[in-house]
Amino acid sequence: EAWWPEDDDKDRPLPSSVKVRVPAKINLHLGVGPLRRDGYHELHTVYHAISLYDEVTARRGDTLTLTMEGVGAGSLALDDSNLIIKAARALAESAKVPAHARLHLRKSIPLAGGLAGGSADAAATLIACDALWGTGYSREDLARIAATLGSDVPFLIHGGTALGTGRGEAVSPVLARAYTWHWVVAIADGGLSTPEVYRELDRLRLGADAPSAAGSPDALFTALRQRDPAVLAPTLGNDLQPAALSLRPALAETLDAGTKAGALAALVSGSGPTCVFLARDPGHAAEVAAAVEAAQVCRTVQVAHGPVVGARVI
Ligand code: ATP
Image 1 (cartoon, helix red, strand yellow):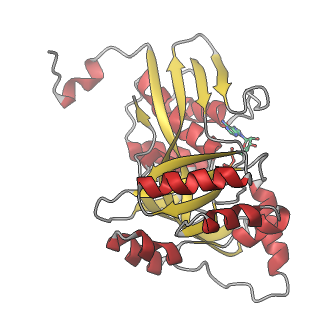
Image 2 (cartoon, rainbow, N blue to C red):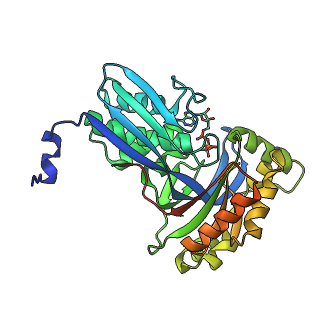
Image 3 (tube, rainbow, N blue to C red):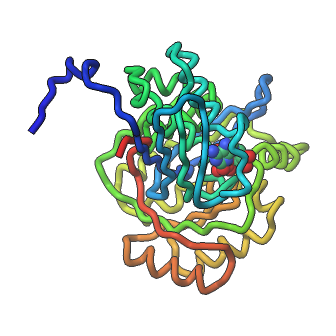
């Protein structure tokens, strides 16, 4: 069996193909502060990576190309507007290598679903092209490039459960003893535009007592350490939920179906329209999923667990 000491890594031949799996995220807490001068909102968010995955494969090529299969095939643009292409170019520019690769996306994370699928793909591309090109960047280096691509991208390099501050791009891991949480994910028909949901929140806050700072997730942190879903449930929260509900009133029925099905908590994921429900254990998650499915309040229902690791070569 071959064995290489760490130091010899750079002498190993570069792979001809690299496959990376990357999870979706939900926000266990999304505290949205006031609008900043740069057009972003100040956030305090707790990201949580769940077992719903996209896959990006990078192969050697003479130019940069992107193909895809799965969710969104035929509707998602595969040109320079795609975050995968942007990520490959950003890495190539930083590492001063030609941006040459044949990239392929296998997509399961719904588009514009509030699960950060596009950001996940960007993170996967950074990890895949780093390995393909032998760039030798650390995860921290890649997270710095990731922050230039989008607020959620650095988190998806790391995964797990993490606090995001700034506009969400500054991430630090939440240290908690290992525990797996069980979720039911209700995927809606069609997406919601993240910038539109933030604009709707600003509109709803006009004249009301807008917060002077993003709400802190302290209660959630305490609950995460207790490893009891019933204790975690009341600490979950999303400031974007009223805005998502205002743009898509039917989501109230989806949330309601989860609550009636016995979920411990029901909330909109990020900017929506995906809704997530907390379950006690895998059996309970399956029960809640079946009941939500039967209520016919969304396109598909999936069970997932978290936290899981971020973008990784498989
Ligand atoms: P977030 O929660 O980060 O706001 P989201 O889950 O609501 O994201 P995404 O699917 O990540 O939404 O992306 C939103 C938009 O980004 C898409 O509608 C599409 O126009 C664009 N986009 C660019 N590249 C990608 C990609 N690889 N996958 C998905 N969307 C992409």
